[in-house]
Image 1: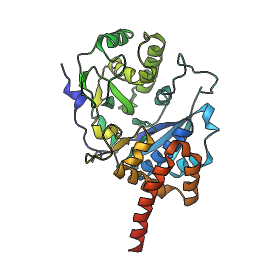
Image 2 (image 1 turned 90 degrees about the vertical axis):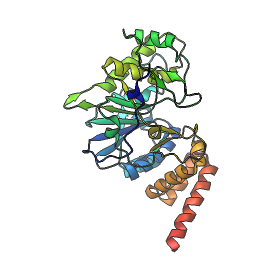
Image 3 (image 1 turned 135 degrees about the horizontal axis):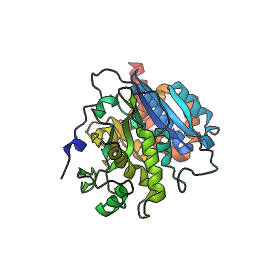
Length: 335
């Protein structure tokens, strides 16, 4: 049995709706994510609308190690830096063992004044403005179906997972986006997650609920799943516990360019590149990101970015894209 509501088509990147206060947040934890965050922040600067603000969450044990360049670019692009409390590096709590992906859930549980929150993986970039609130419709939470399945994504494992929370398996099924496009129990990519902080004036508690459920799952689920996917296994469970389903986002809202080839004529609103070399190989997206970067960084800072983060940014490929964009800009200036 399938539920078309989970596979509904997105409403488009921008809608003429009443502005809704929206916080877009991501995590900066280590040099690799700093290199990615600078690219993401540059695209947010260009495309966020006046009712949308950006937040970068940093672990306590990394906050003092943020590069001055990273801080400068985040400040210049209007991204507020917030520290995730109780992450001093002396413990992996509340997780049973180190779980870096859990930082997004810890951040999701932090208080925000917005009506809608949007989590973005740091290896994403915004390609055009998006009315995130419109993507939700009347749903509590929205995400894109996963491209591929995962270890323990089977009825038996899901039955045990839902059973941890006293829940039966849902009837709903979705179609995964990649490979053989198999039918699956609701299983979503957690690289782009939109959720309501409030319905009317009442807090939903979704972020805190997701954290509580993920911690419970981590400590009590039978081994056999990949711990890196705890966020994706618990996302639909938390929605179910709150009496909702996860609304399906259009593929363009979380477009895996690594799985979709170097070039595409399909619309992209948010590109998810996973591997930065893949980003620089994807011509239109690469040029767009570099154009946004050049708008917010000086020549000296660009040189520092390339030198400081060279291990993480595929420096030679980036320089190739830079030359193309700079040549086009020089030609435009000469006209």
